[in-house]
Amino acid sequence: MREAKRLPDAEFAVMQEVWAAPETPVPSAWLTERLADRWKATSVLTFLSRLCEKGFLRCEKQGKMNVYTPLVTERAYREGESVRFLKRFYHGSVRDLVASLSGTGALTRQDLDELRDFLDRQGRERP
Image (cartoon, rainbow, N blue to C red; front, side, top):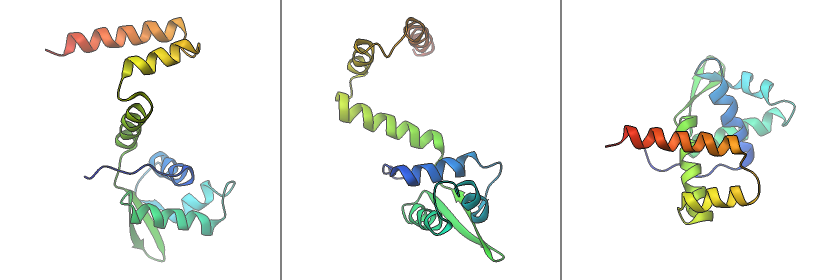
């Protein structure tokens, strides 16, 4: 699959609901109901249409209702966003990212210990 583009916040919110759905395909009525506190049904349907055009969803007709199947997993999307963020803001340097977070006090001692443990495990698992 080609690299997925970054989603605007509203479309990402719709995708989060699709990914969180108890089963797929996801009926449009279920999505419009879940998102009714944020947008009118017509707006949700517009977002769904855009997500189909961008290749994030597939739309199929079931009876009188459209149902949607994700074509991009949440994990794949988040991984792509993480890599884009790292490249854009830190020129691909994880060290610079961690230094930035540490310098602002955003990382606790526990965070640093967990990161150290994670890196140690990664080092043992790779040849």
